[in-house]
Amino acid sequence: MENEINLVRKFHIEKYYVENPLQLGNIQLFQIGRTHCKNDSFIETHIHRNWFELTQIFDGKGYIYTNGVCVPIKEGEIYVSFPGDIHAIDTDKNDPLKYNFLSFWPNDEKLLSKLDEIMFYNSDPTKRIFTNKDIEYLIGNSISETLFNDDYSDDILICTLNQITRYLIRDFENKYDKPKLNVDSSQELCYQIMNYISTHIYAIDNLRSLSEYFGYSYSYISDVFRKTTGETLMQYYTLRRLDVSAMLIKENRLSIGEISELLKYSSIYTFSRAFKNKFGKSPTDYRKSIETESAYMEKPTQ
Image (cartoon, rainbow, N blue to C red; front, side):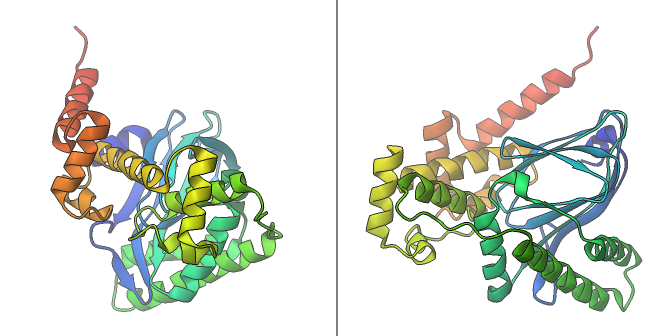
C-alpha cells in the first residue's frame, strides 16, 4: 500500500487506525495525516466507511469528487465528507494540492444527532465547503500530537477533536438556512430516503428505523418509495449495500468476512449468495478477477 501511495503523492504521512480506531474520549479517530500531491496525482475512487472526514487545503487547488459530483477546492477551504461517500481527489497540474485530512466518528448521541442534521441538509456535495481558521490549526496540531505521542498526547487529542467537531457543527448550523422538506413531494421524500440509506449504510440494522427518522409510518414510507421509484425499499437497500461491498472488495483492505460483518449481513454465506446473485461471481472470485486484471495492466510491455 505504501508503494502505491508514493506513486501518486510527493509527500505523505498518515496514521492509519481504521482496523483498530483510537478511542479518544467520546470520539473515534480512524485516520489522520498530510499529503503533498505531485502535479499528476489522482487519489483513486474509494468509498468511505462509517466516519466523517475533513480535507483541509493549505496550498494549491484541485477537485474533490463525491458521489459523481465534481467540486473545485482551493487553499484555505475545508471539505467535509460523509459516511458512505464515494470519493476521489484530483489536483491542479500547475498548482498541486497540499492538504491535511482527518477521519473520525463520535460515540455521542447528541453530536451524532447534530451531524445527522448536517448530512440531511447538505447531501449536495457542492454545499460541503467551508472555512475555519480554528479547525485548520486544530487539525495541524492533532497531526503533530499523533506523531509526538507522549504521555500528554491522548489528552490533547481528546480536547482538539472535541473542539473540531463542535466548530464543524456550529459552522454548518450558521452557514445555511435549513430548507423545509416539502412533505407533499413524493420525489423529494424518496431522495431524502436514498440519501439517508447511503450515509447510514454501515449503521442501519433494520429499515423500519426509517420510520422514526422521517416521522412517517414504515408502511407509508415503503408505499411512497415503491410507487415513486418503481422498486421496493428493500431492493434499493440491498443493491446499495452490494455496490458498497464491491468497492470495499476492490480496495482490498478488508477480508470478505470483515466486509460481511461491516455491512451487517447475518453470515458470510448470506453475503456471498447475495453478491453472486448480483455480480455473477462469489466475493472471493470477484477479488481474484480484480487482482488478475491489475497484474495484467501493470505487466511491462516488451
